[in-house]
Image (cartoon, rainbow, N blue to C red; front, side, top):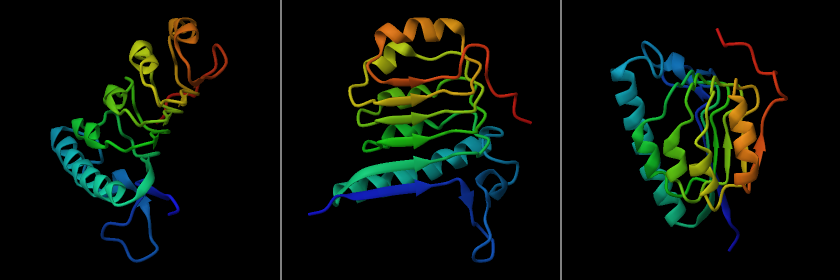
Length: 173
């Protein structure tokens, strides 16, 4: 039996739009994603629904799962992310994270984390180094503390992608 790759993409949203018209996910909710407790609750419920469906899909034969939440103005992930037991790839690039989303360190099957172009300064290096499946973490264009790069190199067994010293993206408007 051939393996199945499942990609759940939330970079664009079509809620209430004519067929073929897409908007960034954050524009599909009044007040935007991640703005206030109400929106966090709504996003948490959505992630929980997606997690249930994804876990069912994987149990029925899919062997690869990717979640794309690029460019959605997210600044934190709901706790329900911990229920994505079969997640292998997550793209959280071009969001508003200031802190590394530590829920990701509990996902044992996670192989790739993309957090490029956020506002992250510190990373839980010890927790990441204990993730056996992890192969790559992209933190390019983040204002990382210099200590992260110095401490991380000897501890990690995965590819850590960072911008050259002193180079990171300008703060997002």
